[in-house]
Length: 231
Image (cartoon, rainbow, N blue to C red):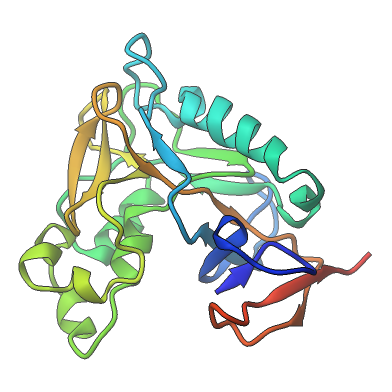
């Protein structure tokens, strides 16, 4: 567990979980750096992915969940902690919704697009990838689960050992060959939802600045990692 709080008592509003240490770029053709990738431990809210019935596109760069909710309202709410978050390259390529985790990972970073949708975006706050959820599976059957399609996680109890599982949650990536649908994580498995019909859970995801240093903590919920900034 990670606290976006340098001092004081931690609470559910500033607790995050570590997805991993991921090779990441801060610009389209930038140098790769290993950065800590975080996701909010609790749901921030429930919204349409596209923002309204008038926006039926699954293009993340035009989604108001991106432009209005996460990278404006949420971004402004964390004020003094903004310096800890780095611009990063996010992969927006589409994928079939029911594939294995490693296939999701490859598809997300591929070149498959729906019409003129971009395959990447530079920004600060995003959502989890379907592959993030797939790789978060644990337990004694982890190897078996990773050999399955993520759409089968809920019929094989893989989701009960997946620490990213919360219910119906949006991801970042569109469904291949659809212009208005996004891959979601519903009841523990991957499926699809129309961007403008359902309100699903969303959690901010971001990469820490490479100048962030570990200050204290063991990573447990009652003693989360705390950070400082190497200025």
